[in-house]
Amino acid sequence: MSEVKAPQSRSSKVMRGISSQTIVTLVIGLTELLFFSIMSRLLSKEDFGYFAAITAVTAVFSSLADTGIGAAIVQHKEIDKKYLDNAFSLSFFIGFILMILLCALSAPISILVVDSSIRIPLIILSCTLLLSCVTSVPRSILHRKRMFFRLGFSSLISLILSSLVAIVLALKGFGFYAILGKNIVNSLLLYFISLFLAKTKFGFDWNPIVIKKIFGFSGWLMASALFRNFSHSIDSLIMPRLMSVSMLGAYNRPKGFISQVSSQLNGIFDSALFPVLSEVQNDKLAIKNAYKTSIYYLNIFAMLLSISFIFNSELIIRIFFGEQWLELKYIFMILSLAFVFNIDIRLTDCYLRSLALTKSQFFFRIIQFVLKTLCFVIGSHWGLIGFSVGGFVAVLLMTLIKVIYISNKVGVSFNATLHCMISSWRAGLLFIPVMILCYIYIPSSLIGNIVNCCVMIIMFIGVFFTVPSFVGQRYYTEMYPKIMSRLEKISPKKG
Image 1: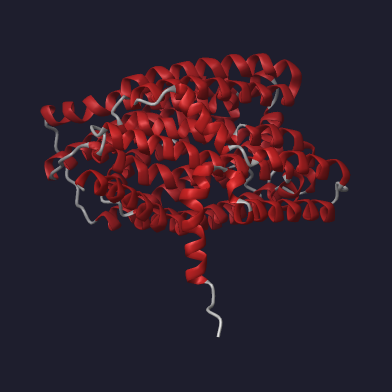
Image 2: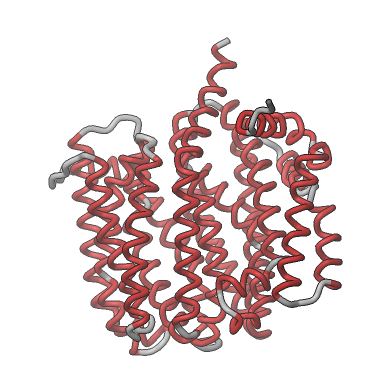
């Protein structure tokens, strides 16, 4: 009986974690989209281009500041005050060094990436490196204790207040400095709120044995995070030189929108799955079952969202960007196509960290960085469309490589994993032909966009609730009964 109860207990932990964080995460997502919509109407393509280049540089530096030490706290089986003080001291030291390093290198970096006009913004934004680093410790304590609501709440409050500051600055004519101000205010608020919610006082301690233990886990994570952010930001780093700052601003709007949505969704599952998978990292059966389940259901969800974005691209742009951005419709559609594979990459990253395969993760980051650089450089010869297609090809290839590796590590054949992924896309066989017909014959106007969206919603509801067997046998036998049971509980009783 114990073998049966354990997986159920772990599943309930994941579901409780997801449930407690989902509401806050959805609110955060809606707040970010509202801020995105407002700023798209207040700033120019050049503003967004400069901001993208600046944040791409700081993202590379910040990759050494927040990932490894925080993950070490979550993953380590037993921690005490001494361990936390050493972790805080190490994070402060790394953050301070990175801040000074960015300030010192701001001149050559600004000229290499764009021009000297971004040197001062880089120096101003360097303080977020230190803040990001020290914030990782209290937030990791909340993560370890599965206080997902507190994590989400602190992010929400920081986001709302910093977004208001940015909107005021944008209205005052500060250009991309308005978004820089948002980042600084958000970093400050997030640190102090997280520190308060973690209810832990930190001191400075430097024990070489403890430091070595922390860095032994986080060292490879830091190195892999560096190349992760390099690969994630490589488009913003090379596009100003290959094309122009204005084209980077145009490309970064649809990319930023899709990244905001995917990061919030990934955050729900990543935050809930990582600590639980770390607990069962030696239970091969539990890991194997969790892998197949997460691959199946996340791909169903990602497929639906990807189709929704592709065939409602004009409506989304009109609502969140403004009419002046409609020329980016095809860029938005191409980036939306990569949404499914981006979620698979994030899922494999979660398993790499949970299984402590940090060294392997580092080499995957290098491969991803090289792939994306090559694909972007080649694609840039065909303008923004070619650049976007190059990014999609790189994501597709990287997904196949990582899925093959993780499948082998958890004891699931690649064919079984591929079958699981393809079966989760089964409903798309019905949606895609219908939506193509709608796209061709429904007028490309606001009213037409709304009609097109309504057709899709009706189809989704119709397929997933009236013919669940068409979605797949696993969905029909596992998820569908739970959904219907929940609906029966919340529906008003007759009489």
